[in-house]
Length: 446
Image (cartoon, rainbow, N blue to C red; front, side, top):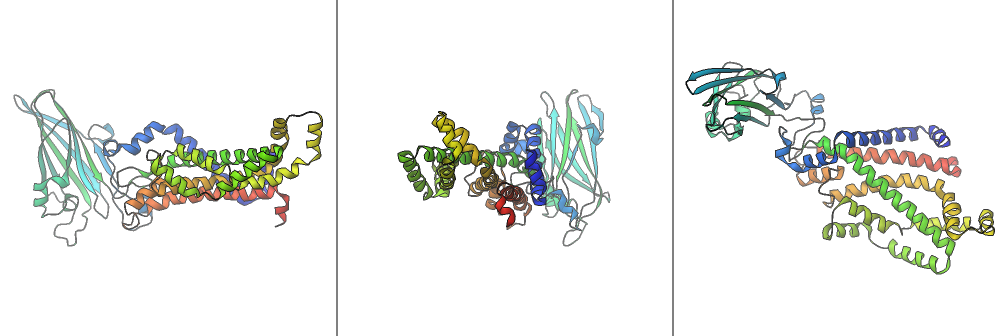
C-alpha cells in the first residue's frame, strides 16, 4: 500500500481522482447512517402524504444566487412551534362558546409570486367541530376574507380552491391576487408585511386548534423538487451508495470470476479449455443490452436481479481471451515447474501461483470497469427499466424525461444527477489511467 500511494503521488490527476472517489465514499457512508434505507424508501414512494410542506417542481435555492430577480422560497409558520412566536388569544363570548384568535405576520420580500397558499388546521374536540374564519390583510391594511370552514380534526384549506375568494379577486389565483399591487397590469408583487388572521369559534371548553400556514415557493431545498413534491436531494444522496455498490460488485464479480475461469482453462487445457473458449465466443456475440431489457420487461427490474444477470453475462466476456494469453506465458515459468516437482495440486497452483501473478495487471482494469457499470445502471433506469423502489441518479433523469423537464425549463432536474455521474466516471478514470502507468512501466514512456 505504501508503494501504491507513493506511485499515486507522482500523478496529480490521480490524486484529484482519488479525492473525488473518497468524497463519494464518505458521502455514501454518511447517507446510509443518517438516512436509514427504510426511511428513504418510504419518503421516495410515499407521495404527498409523506412529503408534507414541499412545493411541486421547485428549483434549488441556489438559483437565487445567480439571478437578480429573487424567487420566493417556501415559508412555513406553525402555531404549535414556540420558535415561530404565534400567540393565541382566547375569549369566552358565551356560556358554551369561546373565540380563539391567532395572527400570522410575515414579510414578503420576493420579486415573484409563490406556487400556492394553504393552511393546515389541527383541531381538538369531542363532538362539536370548531368554526374557523380566515382573513388576509395586505401591507396597506386592505382586508380580504379567505373563507369560513367547519374544521375537522385535520383540515387542509387550499386558497386556490376557495371559489368565493377567487371571484372576489376578479378570477385571479389567490397566490397572485393576494400579493399583487392593486390595478397593476401585468400583476406585480407588492412587497411588505402581510397578516393572516385565523379566528376560531369552539363550542367545548377543552377544544383547541392549531394552524400551519404554508407558502409554497418557487425555490426549495438544496437540490429542488420533482413533480411528486419529493426533494431531489434524497435521491442525489442515496444515489451515491447505490451507484458505487452496483459498480463495485459488478466489477469485482465479473473481473475475478473471468480471471479464475481463464486460469482453469489454461491450466487444465484440452477439452476444458476448448469448452471455455467456445462458450466465450458464443457470449461475445450475444447482445448485452437487449438481454437486460428483456429481463427487465419480462421478469424483474430489481437492481439485484439486474446485477446478477450482468455478472452472469459478463464472466465469459472477451477478457477471458486476454487473461488466457497471459496465463499461457506464466504457465511455462520456472517456478510453476518447481511447484509441480514438489507435488503441488492443480487448484493450489491455480490459486497460489497463476492468479496472483496477474493481479497487478488486473487492478487498473477493475478500477476502470466500475464507472462503466455505474453508467449501465443509470442507462437502464433512463430506459424505464431501473428498480422502481430505489432512488437513483438514473431514476431522477428518467422522471425528468417523462415529465418534460427540459421542455419546461427544469434543467436542474437533469443536470444535477448527470453531473454526479460525470464526477464518478471522471474520478475512477483518473485513477485507472494512473494505475496503468504504475503497474505497467512500459506505459510511462508513452
